[in-house]
Image (cartoon, rainbow, N blue to C red; front, side, top):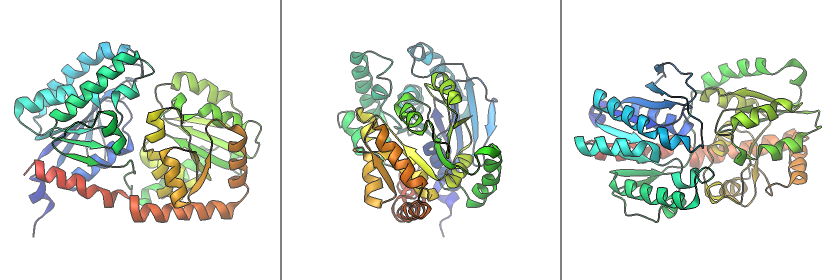
Length: 389
């Protein structure tokens, strides 16, 4: 009988990530590889300079490079060489059997070391970099970044993408191997989530505990349409809006959250706590800029988190996430920036507990049948088995 250790050979994999908060996509990949018998380390860039040198997680240790750096700022490009040198030094010290860089800002040093040592580089595209940085760099430079990323993808031994649209943005380059993995969350043991639910409820001020709870957990950016939500809930005395996370626009948005009478900002939290909040919430939302190609076609992990937790969603209409919601009847859709429609959706869900329960059950059933990570991860494990035979 073949064991997990036989398949993995106990080989070491280093995942390289140029942000502070470890997103659910990274966690599910790291945890799944560890469970298969691989030895996993994560190297991350601590852009807030608040993390320890090594942070222990259940399935891996995360090693941090400390350098305070703003998100979505041209300054990042000036500091990237320091990150790259640190990454190469880290790889040389730990000598992995494979490297798993996430996004273009991690790919160059990974390819350099991978080609030098003749080990596989599995490139994981969370966001196409030229699109992700379009707000902070001139248009022509964004196109150069897209071409550079396409070249890096071609040079990699395998490329993981969220959807086919990312391949299209890169110009459909010929790839050695490619695998599509949608942004469905990694399932955390339900007992851990249930334990956290008690802690979560204690964080809600007593005066807000009987209100309809609307929760957002993820990247704090203007593109998430927080202004739209804040305008809609203004004056709603029966609603509590809780926001968790950090990101490129947190410095500007957090003071706005704090000015809102029915919004509670709780900062970045572990993923198990995101799941706990998502489970106790009455409504989750995925609001995006429908005028942005990235937002319109992107897979939203918060969508699948809501479905997994059995919580109804409010989603921007005419985007990829809306198609999933409509197909599985697990929430309501509203036109982008239509405050009246958002108010109506909140009142409809907030005032009808049976509708919330029905939509939540629909989402959870669809998630378990089609989107759960235990169904999707087989392709990832087969890919690693092939590359590390």
